[in-house]
Image (cartoon, rainbow, N blue to C red):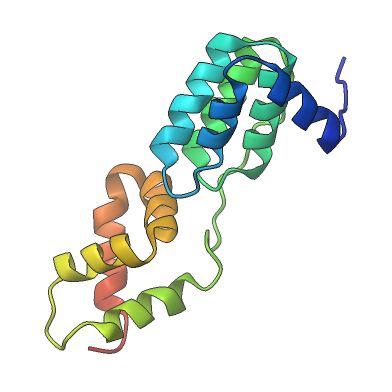
Length: 153
């Protein structure tokens, strides 16, 4: 049986559970998908309704598919039925192309891929993190290919 809770009820339950405030902050760190993944594992071990509520939110809202899948797995392990999240095939961050082009144009002509990657990492940690988490091992290949296809310098 699935029980629906309001956002206020979820917040109260999460705040009341020991250690949940730190886990709640960890799953909200948009520029660190690895921290969110660790928080999902801690929630899996913790169990209980506050953890289930937070994991459910992660499955629905996290920007990195790998984190969503881990949260789904944790829910399943905790005996909660949840719809498996679908991998997004569209642009993960609205305006990614424009963001990347702006960064490329801000660098001197003839800059290296590594310079572009570092600038992206420092200027838009959120974008870097989301795509790194989503692309996994293929991140560098994807980013370099995207960089070389951008018009500009």
